[in-house]
Each structure stands twice: as C-alpha cells, then as structure tokens.
Image (cartoon, rainbow, N blue to C red; front, side):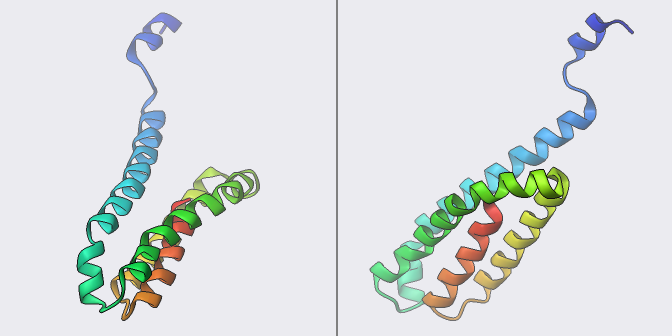
Amino acid sequence: MTGTATARRGLPPAARRAAAVLLLGGFMVVLDTTVTVVAVAALTADLDAPLSAVQWVTTSYTLAIVAVIPLSAWAVARLGARRTYLLALTVFLLGSTLAAAAWDVGSLVAARVVQGLGAG
C-alpha cells in the first residue's frame, strides 16, 4: 500500500472508534443538560421544591463539569486516556443512578454534582 492509498481511505478503524466514543460522550453531556433544563417545571412540582432550589440541579452539574476540566488533563497524563475515560464514565453512571434514586432536591443536586464530575 502506498501513502496515497491510505490517505484516500481516511482514518484507521481504531481512530474512527475512538472518535465515535468521544462524540457519543460529548453528546451525552449536551443531552443530559438539555433534559434537565426542560424538566425544571416537572421537578419543581414532583419534588415540591421552589424554582430557586431546582435551578441548582442544572447549575451544580455545569459548575462541576467546569471545575473538573483541569483535573481531567492531569488524569490523562497520569493514568492514560483510556483509564481516565472509563473512570469518568463510571463516575457519570454512578451519578445517574443516584439522580434516579433522589428523594428530594438536595439529593438530586448532590447526584448531579457527581454526574458533572464524571462528565468533565
């Protein structure tokens, strides 16, 4: 195979899989934020909490993502990209499970912080 033939085919399969996984992860973060913004009214009613408290469900998630971004770069350098991604995914899934089991707005906000730590 020549370099020209390889260039015409595009990315190698391993790079395509890695790109797909990263795109899926990024999409999950955007989807998760969108869902909670849309659900604010329902959360206010279901959790019998004021709007000012329920808004922290989205705010805490976003702040946790931003706070953990510098740590992510350190973790990749220290642990490697694969381990860091799998750890972040595990933390995100733990936060999702805790959010699903939330019994009040405070527990939901705490679970969303855990999700944000994993999403960052």
